[in-house]
Image 1 (cartoon, rainbow, N blue to C red):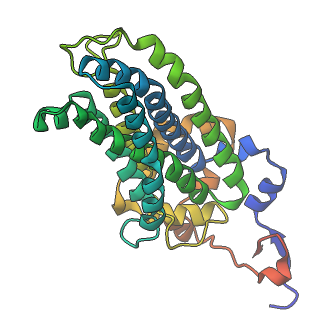
Image 2: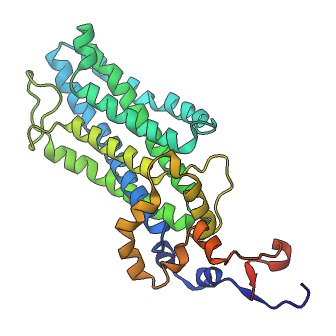
Length: 309
């Protein structure tokens, strides 16, 4: 009513004064940030590790099977070209109602994991009795890896609300750079000389093979995205914690449970923010407490959200 005194909502005041790290240290952002960052790091490690290792593998494997240098070069070009159709297909699947961003990311990462394993054990080559069969799984593994790396960035950029979106995406991108930087170093350290009687490339950590490592990491990246259980497709991007928690509550049935994850990770976040518990209430909890805010139109309230005393 006219004359009602209005006060700024606590969260908006905190947004205006907190640093980026303080904002991200509050649940559910902290759990989502940790999980998404690890997924980015693992996927980047698998992608750039394959780029580093595959030429070494093809050179040795091709020489053992009588490939010419031209055949080796063409094989590498074809494998690299797999990223082009993968990206165009991804642009289509992320807009499909029953697939969206989340399942596109999970499918890409899981596909990379599957084809890395098929490549490592020469399934196609053994099935068709042709050494050129290694081209098929390496083509699909590279394409899925590129798609998973790209859609991961799109997905993360849409699950965080406005005031922490750039910070969350920056942290995930930094972890991705860590994965891409250390992939050649670690892969180069682990691989040993190719032995013609072995499938795949042995590592110093026998019986681990390099492409089995890539398969495990990309599969773990897919599992972490599945655990986030948030699908941003077809929705407006969240603007605050309440809208983020609404999406978490609505997506409980689509996969993992972010609320369960916060119970494992949240002690670290809540120690960084004394008001972490109060600021991460779910929609049901707010309704039970009778504290749903009354907001004014954007044209009247500017950049602040208000509630009646």
